[in-house]
Image (cartoon, rainbow, N blue to C red):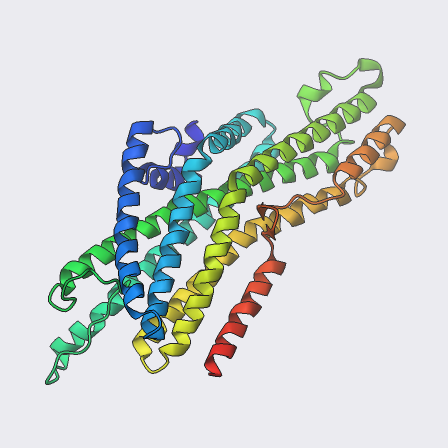
Length: 395
């Protein structure tokens, strides 16, 4: 498992270890950390429910703020819950990933695997940097009225802005800084949970894409003797034909293993995708309504507009690996005949026909079989989000 201490997965492992979702860490330690995070989320939920109960049916603006807060906390809880719930399947996934770095010893195949892992590392870093930037902006904007009061004071202090707008059954102005510290710390923890789950999913899918690329490479080169370990297995009397057949069999076996690997990814993240997309749609709806309601308050409007952009980028981040998996796995079908099959033996051609049947349907990731992670559904969500804003702004 040394690969998870390498540059490709080290940030993923550090976040998962710190947040108690790294499956190879002590179960007791993971349970303590996850229990603490659960208590923090409960402490966030209760003030949201109290304030929602206070204003529901009386003030739509304030009610929607708390609906947004509840959806957000639920979305974060889903990430934490599924990481713990799927721990055993994720172990199998991580072990299979580590084993792949030892199995493929061919120079070109190792290069392909490392290139895709490097891409996964880049995606991880970009995601983490974006989330940290968004977190800083989101928690600093509420300080604007206080800073303005110091720089350009008025007769009366400007209205205070809160991060999550919960009701803590105390005077919110008197205990503003205590509430601010609690909410900003809690918001940071929720972002850390995001950074511990989503980037690892993207990195694992990138590794899977690397395996598909190795399979494509083998299909395109099965008729070109180059790998000494296979040549040594070949019969001296018909070396070229035996090499081609052996290489093609290895490509088919690899494809079979990739399909198993993809199935593990699907079963590990299926429930997560389903619950996460449900929570995200709720967040999109509530955020769109809040933006329209706060057009007269520019700072709040900007803050929630940034949240809306972040939500759409998050959905894109979840959909992009799924779309790439569909594209790359679909390309395998074309690679079964975009090669020198006509120069191969009859038995090799039969193998290619057999493999083309298995590759005719691309692999895909879905949420419980109901929502497919691809750009088509992402575009539909974009359209739905735009429709919400248009409809609510017309009232």
